[in-house]
Length: 345
Image (cartoon, rainbow, N blue to C red; front, side, top):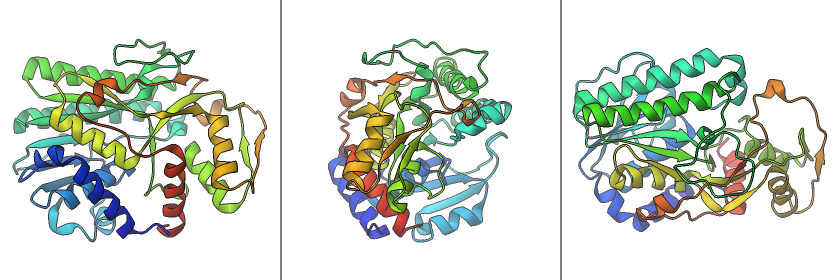
């Protein structure tokens, strides 16, 4: 069974493999928004475990919630409460900022698009203003593969790739918000010399995923746990690559330590590139050992907030040139996620 100790052992191994990256953070103060999210949570535990001299400033809305989450790590974390849509107030010293706060619910993209844009734009501007005020050494904005729109084929997607996003499609509230925030990062780097860098993450999962998470990997995991057939509401033709949470953490910290300001970096495990249908079959046959089946029952998905069918084959050579490498394959991602969902709740 997956336990907190198992996670810490993985984190320590990650630290030994990326010693040059973690050495940059020694005796530094790192301000992290979105601390209670899957990636923010993983980042904080990764830094605290591997760099005891580092000081984490976790920017959160609910201090009680976050203290429970980090009850074994509190000696290295300072909790600062606030709303990302308002100017950030903190009097202490800050060396680095990681802006990880974001709404990730596809349903919210179509049900509350104004809020999605507001959180993205105001939140990122406030964080960049804060970075300017603190004269930080590095700033990383967590963007998304969704800024590329809906690529139609399996061609590799480099950071210079364009987009076919429809500004009149309400679901674009998320992806267009991310695109504008990236431009804000470039603008602050140019006009105010804020060392802002962007990392474009593919869909990321691993230990810490909540049992009721609404994304496809969590749905497939629940089906395996509960011995339920996987029911697809589309043919599952969409193809993308995936990324393990700890691989994402090492990617983010690599960009923070080694990336160039006003540059963007794709982050994905290229070896995981597959269709939704293929991923469902992997879970049914390999993870659930054939005890469940994959069924296709097509229905109207317009209210779900799903993206159109796409082929998101991210190229990560730019990030690899900084010394980064994904370590965990798709089967391992599911095995560890499912163990975590059943043992950690």
